[in-house]
Amino acid sequence: MTDLAVSPSAGGHSPQNAITRGSWVYRHGHHLLLLPPLVILSLGFLLPITLLLSRSVFDPTFTLAHYLRLFAVPAYVKIFLFSFETALITTALTLVLAYPYAYALTLVAPRWSALLIAFVLLPYWTNVLVRCYSWMLILQTKGLLNTALIDWLDLPIRPLPLMFNFVGVVVGMVHYLLPPMVLILYSVMRGIDLGLVRAAEGLGAPPLRAFWRIFVPLSLPGVRAACVLIFILSLGFFVTPALLGGREDVTIAMVIDTQFTETLNWGFGSALASVLLAITLAGLLLYYRLGERKALAV
Image 1 (cartoon, rainbow, N blue to C red):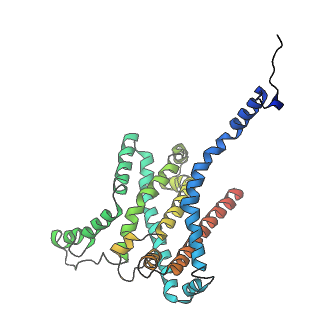
Image 2 (image 1 turned 90 degrees about the vertical axis):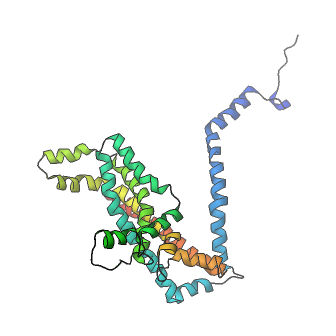
Image 3 (image 1 turned 45 degrees about the horizontal axis):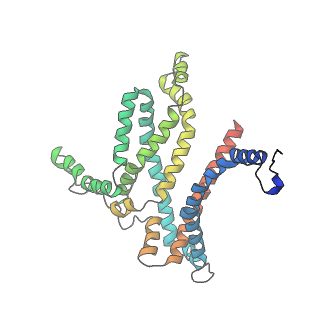
């Protein structure tokens, strides 16, 4: 009998071709795993952003009137400045409260750190509306805090104005943003070798000086990352300022919502959102550039 051989030119699949195809899949097939998230990001982020940018300059035809109105009217510039001021103050207060808490998490036993983390996350799992209404019960004129100060402690003072003003906005925002700040700081701090601080103390440095000169510089990357994230989140706050703030406590997110839902001025609302997005991206770019320069300097 004559041995039959399958020729590749005859349309058959030789083992060599099969191995070649298999090796390509083996070497490049993992890139296919990127397709689902890329599709989701394109449809859920890039496409809406593109439509938003196009609507800001094509409403109904090409025009820059919406951007000119934004910078020509002083009220909108004032709202932007107020939003930045609120975000900066919120970020600073959140950092002041979260840093010692995160540092304490690195010092206690693992079982206690898990309990303390649970205390931080428990409010974070509550709906933002529920938290805002809870703060209303605490901060209002006849709320829990004023009742405790005036009726229980019998202090000769008037009820403190803690709600429907800037104080209420900051309190609500700090309460909401405290958990992510704590978690980011703790994720960095737990990687710092506390033996370095104890070694500095053993060489004669006071505990506070050893903490300031050793531990704090090592935790600065986490501080920068956490502050950038909290600042960006603060810029886009809407619910908390709307419920706990007053008439003058208007953020840019509230104006954008008004343009889209009440006045139906989609072109101007898209321009406001585009400027806010550009400012946010510029802040992120500046943060990364500063981080790269510092790394090169080291």
